[in-house]
Length: 83
Image (tube, rainbow, N blue to C red; front, top):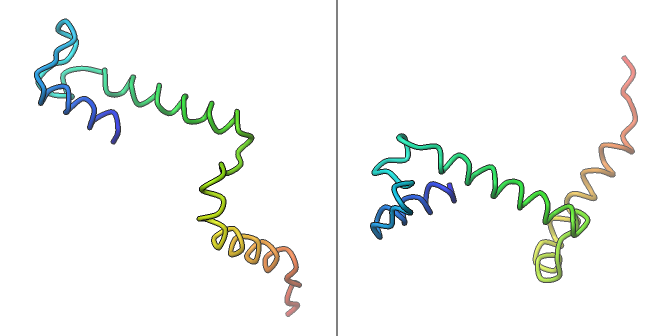
């Protein structure tokens, strides 16, 4: 979504980057390549921070972490029901 929106913004502002940007994203693979680059950058960022939430997000999303912990506890502590 981000790469297509960026591609559309380039089209709207009539920026063609030397003929690289066509009138439609169906005519080129620039948006697909940009999608893979953005995905690689996102994964690299998460790998660098150790897959933990950074400071402001850990406070905001703390209630969801409690919910996740409770689901984990319920799943791992449940006993099997014998028939």
